[in-house]
Length: 203
Image (cartoon, rainbow, N blue to C red; front, side, top):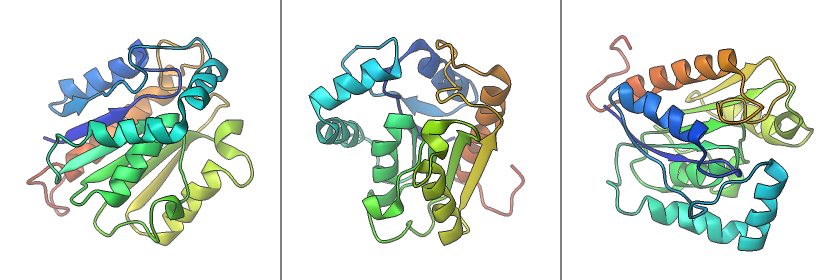
């Protein structure tokens, strides 16, 4: 099965993030969940963002990259929830041998980490079609569409709703139907990129 590094969102490594990691583990995947906030969790996105600003986004990004250093350089999928997309996308674009990327609730411009999306690295982007943090002009949704237009290895999935962290069962934003579908699509993605699975084999 597939090895995954999954980075939490700006409210921290919540029980909701851990729950999704457990779903992937039950399907047979190895999932690492680095805690970039050293055990801190926050009640709101605003509180989490204040902590991230105080700590420094670059410092937190460096922590995320460092968390993957002990893993094999090949065959790893990098996943991130919102804020966690930063290290996930950077590693997917810059670490040799990346098997894929799962970008939940956010997408950065490809130019942030390179000239183009790397060949042979499939990627999924997921977000809600009414989430202002994802769909605002010149933001994540535009970057995701640019990514999809630039490579045949990218998929964009939009879900009906306005919530940002709709995948997290520990938060009021949780949307069970959308989260279930997202996890299903992520599992199908992981099965496709699993070592020993060719693109011609059914997944």
